Length: 154
Image (tube, rainbow, N blue to C red; front, top):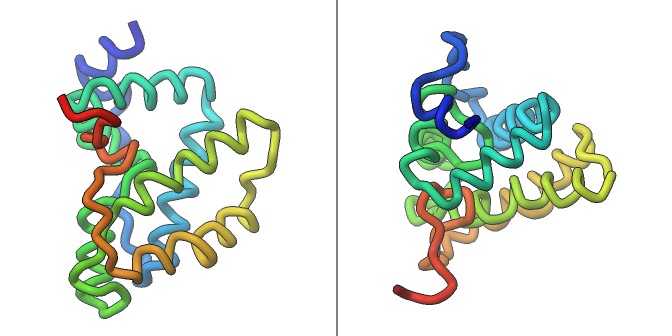
C-alpha cells in the first residue's frame, strides 16, 4: 500500500531544494543528513520503501524525482559540481557512496548505534571522500543506485 501511494504521486508538495553547499564534503554531509531525517520519520516505513526501491528501479526513480533526493544515492548534480570544482576526478564513480553510505547508516540504526553528526562526518572524511577521489571505476552499480548490479548475471 505504501509503495502504491508513492507511485501515485508525492505525498506532499514540499520537494526539497537540490543539494549544493559549495563543497563536496558539505554536499555529502547534506545527503547523509537528508537520509538520516528520512529514516527518523517512521523508520520501519522508510526502510520498507528503500527495500522496495531495490526491487523496482522505476519506484527508485519516482521517489527521487517526486520527493527529491533521499540521500541514499549520489545525485548527478552533486557529482558534477564536485568534478567541476576540481574536488573529484572526471572518472569519479558514485558506487562507493551508493553502496556504503545508506547501508552503513541503516545497519547502525538497526543495531541501535549512533548515526549522529560526528559519525556522519567520520564516514564522509574517512571513507566516502577518499573512495570517490580514487577515480577507480568499480564496474558495479551500488545497492541504492536505482539499478544495483545483480549478484548473478541474468
